[in-house]
Amino acid sequence: MSIQRISVNPRLAGAVVHAGVAWLSGQVPDDRSQDCASQTRQVLAKIDALLAQAGSDKSRLLSAQIWLKNISADFAAMNEVWSAWLPEGAAPARATVQADLASPDVLVEIMLTAATGA
Image (cartoon, rainbow, N blue to C red; front, side, top):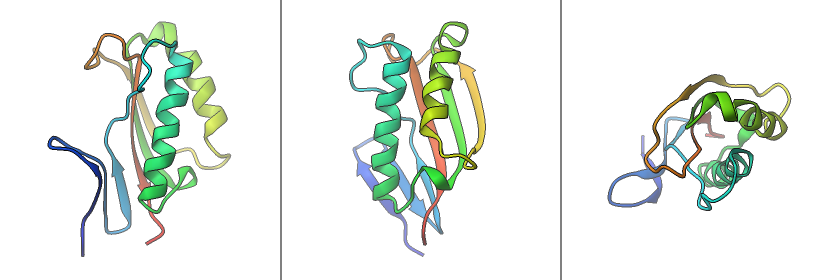
């Protein structure tokens, strides 16, 4: 069975597909000057693009890991955007935690696993 790597740089792949499963790396927003809701929308748009390249979509999610810089300040805003994005009946297993993220202006990072059409 082959392994497909998508959006590869010297350190990581944006996604890896193998045996009917796509593992997405943690995605962060490009415009970090915005609030958590806007950053979450940016991240989910990047995830949609990666899932499409991997032969999947948000209706096939298996698990999600979400990291917030300030969970008490941003959990509700992130969840509102997440809920609007997620198709009904497609909720993955999910964990959301507070973490010091790689850059001080990143408020949210999301990593997903999804089934592919293969």
